[in-house]
Length: 129
Image (cartoon, rainbow, N blue to C red):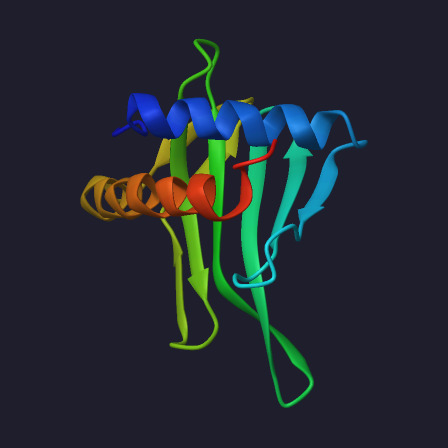
């Protein structure tokens, strides 16, 4: 499995900490030039990040990614969804607090995307956090 890079880990740690301080959920909407970011701790080892847009009155994920945090506090992506382009990738499942990846190639691609996306989030939403 491919884990996120060191910079992405620092960003995810910060987002996790912000959500934890707010009962497991936080919406970062501090920069009107960019989509707000919803952060939700789903389980004790799982966090969801999502940009939401709206189309015809419906909320659209653009994108949503879900990450699993292992016992070494490393993050691994296993879910990606973008409603605008009709893509949903579930490439693993968590069983007994362990991520079982079913498609290592897709998981690696998701992680590469996450490493870019998380840097964008850092500059768009975390500058004053």
